[in-house]
Image 1: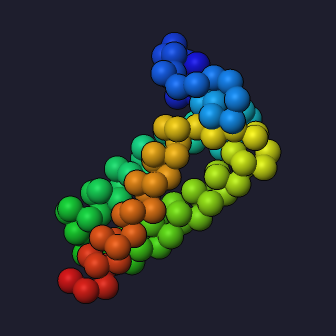
Image 2: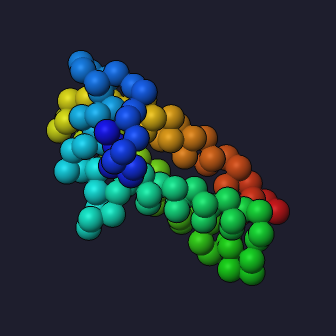
Length: 112
């Protein structure tokens, strides 16, 4: 099971140190009742919109929003390792993608 779509079974190990079920069903998988997976989806959507549409206010939002997302990644990874004692492969993929957006976000924000 996962926290975003409770009827969908995760195709990921569910025991041992790689355990998506333990991560996505923990109380850390929600912030104020909103699934972290949904927040991540919104974050990626907003980052993509700002990078592609480049509204007049994008330089003021794009880089700070990326920094906030990477700070959240740091928090979530520390929770996985030190509190839940399990790593979610899907979450880790999203974390890596968020971090790898950095050079592109920097280039768009500060050099174009």
